[in-house]
Every structure is written in structure tokens, then in C-alpha cells.
Length: 407
Image 1 (cartoon, helix red, strand yellow):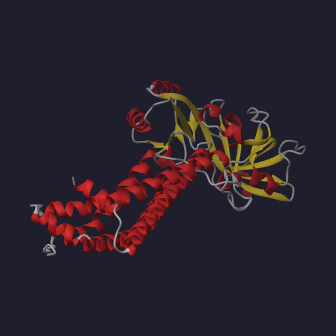
Image 2 (spheres, rainbow, N blue to C red):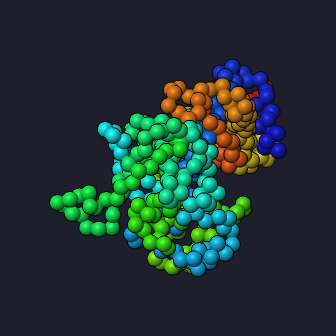
């Protein structure tokens, strides 16, 4: 019943045009606030998905490393047990260390990462090789795939490099001050290609085969830096992580992809919620317009309130009428805003009509990813703000004790 009164009050002609104008201003403000919130959250979702896809090329779904130190020991028996854990699809063993890549007068500090034949099943790293081919060679005839930044730093064309590069890596010996070269191993290596993933990786990584890197680092047969795992579809990483941790013990550290990049994901989520809070202020401003419109409507309908009081309407019923009026304004504005955001998002996904400025990005348009949770969150936000804004004029209406005008 109270919504029926609210709908009639919304549609009815007012004695003062200012009431209609203010009401529609509040609806338009809610509409644009709602659309802006959903669009910004969807763009953040798009960038988050883009970053996750890029980092999935380097960071696996699960990673086993040492709880203390740089290296782990995994015997064949342990590897069999790891592969037998439910949900695990593939396991790749890696060795990684910082070294120096030398090309005549040019040199670059790099992280040399050695991977085995299962690495392409763990990540989509091979898909990011933009020059040359994904070929890591073998332990005796190694090949390097350089990050684009490393390739530029050492001045080579990775797909057709004729003169081999020199790799210097630290040895497991004490540093000899009189002859520092005794503390490093050196080997020559050719390149087979270059990759582009993200500047952080492109400027410091070079990838080769596991046998070569273990040999130059003088690592034992069962010694590795990490074991990287991919999971089967519909598998919960946290559950597999718990099972592996129980299997391996406290000397090993099992991390999910989120934990490997916890600071990055935390910053992204913090930024998203901070922007959400800032844009919610637009809805708060719209709420002030709603308060003004409803207050003027209360004054407009004081005789109707007197009639309702005379007919036995309670104060709570009168209050619910004007609360419903505020909810109606928010539903109209919020609904149109959600529809507008949905249309713009779908157009951006299909046609990419809003470009990203600059030429240093991997994509040239704003990425958008729609999530049902965002629509629910914004809808609840609009509803709560509308309830709070409507309470003040609704309580004022309930406290009115007007007399009917005598003829």
C-alpha cells in the first residue's frame, strides 16, 4: 500500500515545478553515480584480469620452495608422491640464480632460469615468445630465450645471433679476493628467441634448460630452486596446497599464485576499494538532492497526511510512504544507471571504442570485465544511501499533525 501511495506521489503533478526538477536531478545524479561506479569497478576487474594473465606466464598456480635458503631437495620418491596428490596436473622443476650476461662491451645483470620439459605445461610462457622460437637446447648445447629488455641491453638479435654470449654464474666456493674469477663459472651460450610479458620480467630474465643451469651452478642431482605445479580444472588451490604442505613438512614452503604476488594483488584490491569509496560520494551528493525533493514533497502533501491521519493511518505508515518514495527514486536512477553501464561495458568489450593513451601498453584500449558481484554491491550501496537519505523527511512527515482545511 505504501508503495502505491509513493508511485502516485511520484507521477502526480506538483503545485511547484521545483519539486519535480529536484526529484529528477536526484534521479539523474543517482543514475550517473551508479553507472560510474560499475564502469570503474569493471575496468579495475579488466586490468586485474590482464595482470593475472600476464603473471600466470611466470608464476605457477602452486610453487614449492625452501622455507629457509634458496634450494630444495626433491628425490624421485618425493616427486612421485607429489604427482599422486589429487588435483595436480603437472610438475616442473626449475633452477634460478642471478648472474651476468656478457656480449663484448655490453653486459646485463640477469636472472638465469632453467626449466625442464614440463614447463610449457605449467605456464603459457611459450606463447609470449615474439621473436625466434621456444627452444632451450640441452645441457651441452644450451640456448637462451631473453627478455626484450635484456636483449636490448646486450645488443643482440635473439633470433639470429651469430656470436655466442658469455654467462657468468656464482660458484659454491668462498670468494677469493686475489682472484675473483675463481668464484664464478662461465660458459658460452647462443640465443633462440626473445619474449615480452611485462617490463618487470622482460628487463631481468633469461630462460634456458634445467640441465645447463644446474651444471653451471654446480647443483646436485636432486637439488632445485623450486618445483612449479599446474592444477586440473575445478581444483581448489588452497586444498592442494594444504595436502602438499602436510606431505612435505615444514622445511618446504608451498605458495599459491596469490601468495607469490601478495603485495601486488593487495595493492590492486586496495586501490579498487579506495576508488569505490571515492565514487560513492557521488551517490551521497545525490542523496542531498533526494532529501530536498522529499522534504518539499512532505510540505506539498501535508493535507494528504492530515487526511490519512483522520482515516486512522499510523505514523509508521506515513513514514513508510515517504521512505518508499525515496526507494522509488533510487530504484529508477540506479536501474537506469546499471543499464547504461551494462550497455557501455558491452560496447567497450566488443568495439574497444575508448582507447588507452600512450604506446607503452600491451593493449591499446581500456579492458572491461563485468562481474555480477559489482552490480549487487552497487545496488546495495544505492539502496542503503537512499534509505538513510529518506529517513529524515520520512520522520518529519510522520510527525506532522495537520488539520484538514475547512471550506
